[in-house]
Structures are given as C-alpha cells and as structure tokens.
Image 1 (tube, helix red, strand yellow):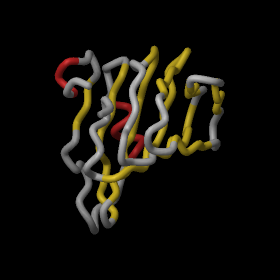
Image 2: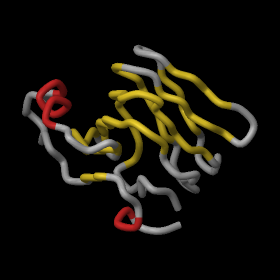
Image 3: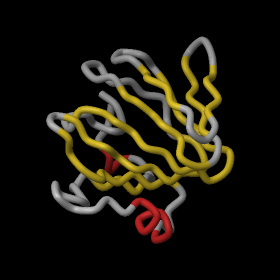
Length: 125
C-alpha cells in the first residue's frame, strides 16, 4: 500500500506529549479543523496512543504485523471488515487483529483513541 502522503488525511506521527507531560485531549480536539485527523499523543513502551478526530471514511487496508485497538470517546465509529461491520458508540472499543482487511468510517464527527505499535504505518501495509 502507499505512504501516508498519498491519502487526504491529516496524519501526524510526531509525539505531541512526551513522558511526564499532561496529555490534554480536549485542547487537541478543539483545535482540529480537518475532516480526518490523526495525531500521535504519546508513546508507552513500544506502542503509541493516537487521537483521531474524524468524519467520513478511510480506505480499505490491513496491517500485516500489528494489531490495532480503537476506542471511541465521542460519536459513532464503524469498523468495516470483509464479513461484517462493527458499530461502536462512546466508551466502546474493538481490536482489529493483524492481517485483517478493514476500513473505518464515521458518519458524523467522532473522537477516538487508537493503540498500536509505534512502527505501524497508519495507511496500511
């Protein structure tokens, strides 16, 4: 699959909040102007916590070596798999195992957290 630059998403892989820093999610969310925004908040061991503020749909993709956890803070978030769709509301989460083809959608603006390895390519392998 292609690199993050080939897709119309605002994806920021830099660590916004280093260790020993308050992670201020509401401040980040209130500053977002993009329809599909992904920002790495912090790193925990070999994983990262990312914030997504999104509306619309992402492309179909997979991660060959990495599981991906999605947790909804606000709104509705849908994970389409090849055989079913998982409809998540606030305070619900779901793990997409490595190698599973999926796409994500948010019919209205949603705010989510993602937990994945720091090496993962957000747009897929």
